[in-house]
Amino acid sequence: MAAKGKRENIGLKCSECGERNYIATRNKKTHPAKMEIKKFCPRCNKMTLHKECK
Image 1 (cartoon, rainbow, N blue to C red):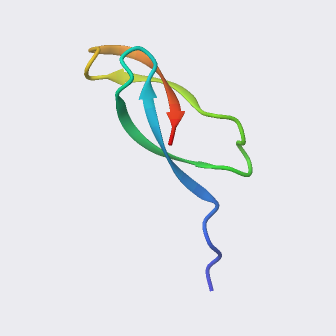
Image 2: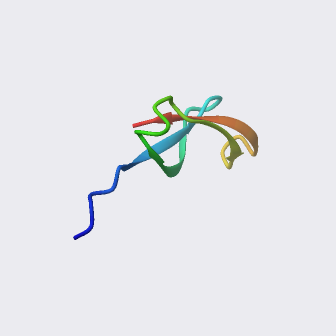
């Protein structure tokens, strides 16, 4: 019997234009802080900081 996963799906929103571009997963137990990653934003057409949102 498999245990329920502790990973949750999160959306990543561009900090410049505000568009949600990516969906990622993270483990709430080991990484309680909100995630921030530099990724490519197709709307801004450049690398921007993407922050976690629901």
